[in-house]
Amino acid sequence: ARVKWEGGDVAYTRADVRDAAQMERFVADTVARWGRLDIAFNNAGIDLPPAPIADTDIAGFDDQVATNLRGVFVAMKYELPHLVRARGAMINTASIGGRHAFPNIVAYGATKAAVIHMTRAAAQEYGRDVRISAIAPGPIETPMLERVRRDWKVTTEQLVAPYPMRRAGTPEEVAAVVLFLASDAASYVSGHVIGIDGGDLA
Image (cartoon, rainbow, N blue to C red; front, top):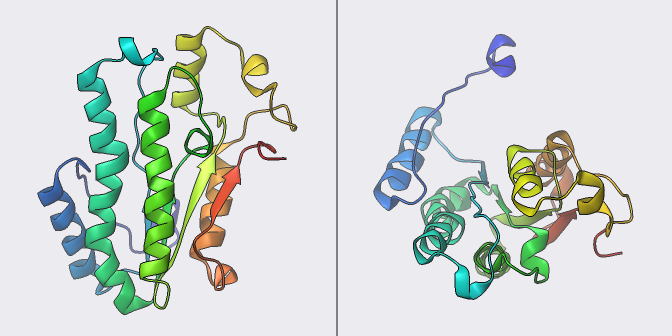
């Protein structure tokens, strides 16, 4: 709304990342409207209530794979030809859960680890023309974190205790890193997984 208020050209389109035909149309409509695709931020993702592997719901597992993994792959597939022509940038959302294992969220962690792998592979395949990196957020104050607190029956203080900064991040802090990766300031940055995690890997 702010961009439009300041005179920018803004459009909103709804698409289900689990539906390849919708995603193909979404990308095509975007290019038809503006003539090119310079930046792609693949951020869709879902989680499930925690459960050990033996108790994990198979339908829920499949839904996470369809959204978090296949959805990102499908988006990349249709975005990359246009990004090559524009010599653009792609940012995918992974997670600290894709960097190392956590108990009781095997589907989420596996899909985010796969996003990291796809990001690095794509950076090798398309590195001459497209900058491709991922972000790996830690605990960020979003509705998903609220569900984690509820499902795990923990406080924010307990969740962030392992992280050196001892606090949750904000959506604005995530957005700042995405904007950097999308900008010319990151013109020599590709194939990286940038942690936004309060020092998780320190």
